[in-house]
View 1 (cartoon, rainbow, N blue to C red):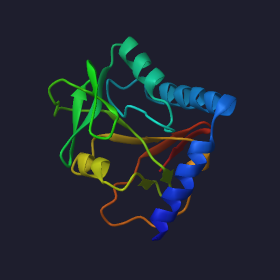
View 2 (view 1 turned 180 degrees about the horizontal axis):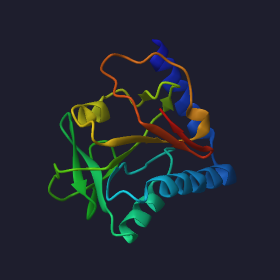
View 3 (view 1 turned 90 degrees about the vertical axis):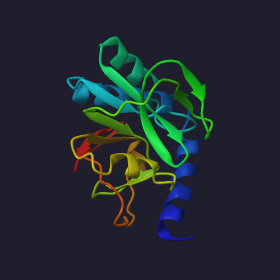
View 4 (view 1 turned 120 degrees about the vertical axis):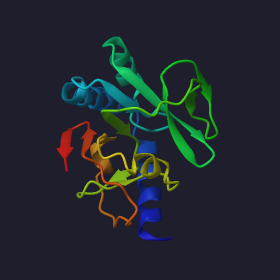
Length: 176
């Protein structure tokens, strides 16, 4: 196993153990920190949380309620697309994805899942590179990782990794 694989394994286990009231309070804090810092923007690309990821359901609901444009990821082959929030169906990885037509216009903020983030703003995902490919060549998008404070971890990034602009967690916002 390389360093990234070890960090992935360790953080997947830590996130899976994080539950109960601590998790409920942490998700509430992630929600508040994200909304308080980014609600002024107009368009959002937000991951549909599943498993032990930081919860995005309330974030998506609040953005929709505030008349923001909200897009969610849909994976087709080895490509991830932004699709307007709407009717959902279970996708290739068991994650709920929107059914509509892909969107290719301006997006202000991308809320991105992660297993870990290092002090230089590089995220560690599941290793498929979907987000790096989606974000490459789109410097106008503010890249915001969502997670829990314990997901801050040191690892060496690769040359193709796209750094985040910020990390929103239960303890606040770190800007890179």
